[in-house]
Amino acid sequence: MSNSMLITVIVIAAVVVVALCVGLWMMSRRRRLQKRFGPEYERTVDAAGGRMAAERELRDREARHAAFELRELPTERRHEYAERWSSVQERFVDRPEGSVGEADELITQLMRERGYPTEGFSRQVRDLSVEHGRTLDHYRAAHDVKVRSGSGGTTTEELRGAMVHYRALFDELLDDQRSR
Image (cartoon, rainbow, N blue to C red; front, side, top):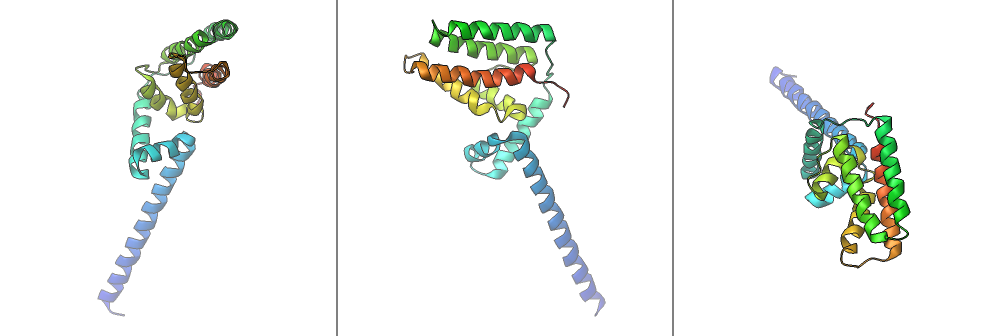
């Protein structure tokens, strides 16, 4: 085998090895994003129109999230929030629509105190997706009912369901420990 033929084989082999390494690296990044964001990963792929754009969006969310100064609540504050939640639930019997609105406000207050920006629902969803991607469907469903309830377009059963959905996110935010 001539030297030029040997060099060609080595170059081709090196290109194949580099391509395999890049492919494996990209697959591991994708798996990491899928694991971290859960169902939010596929939702973002659908919304962005492809995996590359979605993964760029999810990495941007991670970078934004990393800049937050998230904090754990002291035990006393967690108890106060839990009591406030109980009060909202108790009022549901007499004022279902009002209670759903109060639950939404309580979630926003809890997010703010934990260190999340609260500049609008869609921004909240994106910011929460980094650590709470598995709970976002609950939040979306509850918020949808809250919005529709303003025009009287909801049933008491839908409002009850919204409270259950809000509770899922509330519990997760309240008990989230920053030990990760």
